[in-house]
Length: 401
Image 1 (tube, helix red, strand yellow):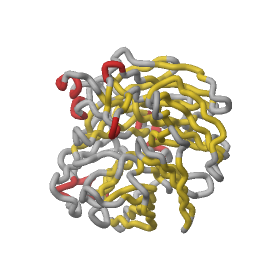
Image 2 (cartoon, helix red, strand yellow):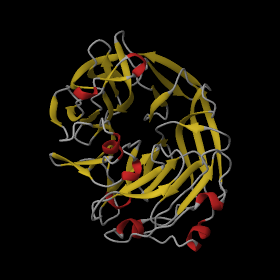
Image 3 (cartoon, rainbow, N blue to C red):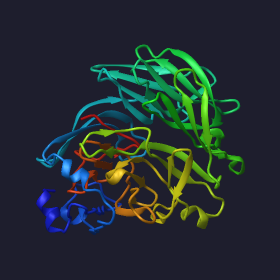
Image 4 (tube, rainbow, N blue to C red):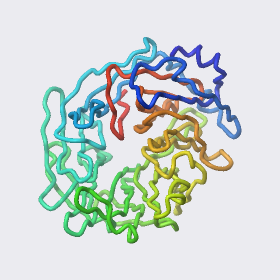
């Protein structure tokens, strides 16, 4: 949709967007399907991002994504999706068939791609130009869906679990041949997403849930979710934090994006956002549970509100104002919180199947994959493009350029 249509609808510099799609259709989005409501919330927002922003409205975006066709047992693919915002079209530039459902995706320094199978998978796929190669976890181990490269790009760290006792490990692999170099215990159950900061520390979200046959959740009354910090050089545990509400499962992580007055930006050593999923025995308590926690200094704080998410935080990304966006496909909503905001996290979009999120730090633009297509939003504008064909994107994606 051209930018002028959003401006006519009332979206301003601090505007928010709302997107609504049909549950039964993955057809091309029209103006009527896209805009459902427009809200404005200028309180406490920073002018730095808009003052330092370049005009990126006509640039194309390329995402590393994974998807399948809408029918249930279709094959899974990973590839590059190009969103041409000026022409208003999406296209698939390259694709490779995967051996199963993927989860976390990584763009490595040499421009190659690493896809990790969804828990409890045994496979990694490395894809470089026209060649791809599969790697398997060691016997007795399962991959938990995420990986991250070391600061010098020579190593890859994966979250894994032992099959017998389900204890968590960080498995360190050589980034060229993916051979296992180290296996470090995380002292937790179900390590999931991990990030690395500028001080070479690994931050690990442990879901804390034991799994039975077919990945079924078991022994929820004994779940023990925690955030851990590990030295990426030797595997030593530097800290562990848990929440008072033990029924909240910490799963996905994102660094907040901050911009100095000079316009330079950096990640790390600031706010760490944590997307959570509620496992309370009471359905009422579960759907009203918070979906965002923020770690700063030496403590975790849950952010109230967000009941539209129904207790399920899917993906998380940095967002305008030094905050975070959290998606919830169960609640058909996208939420936004930032530190200057007084009160709870707020729903800013209602849309079918919102899940994968990523963020461009240069202009603090958030990109969301949903049933109808890809949406982008910053405090200047909002736009949505339809998928080039019927396709269902998976949980995560990465902005390549």
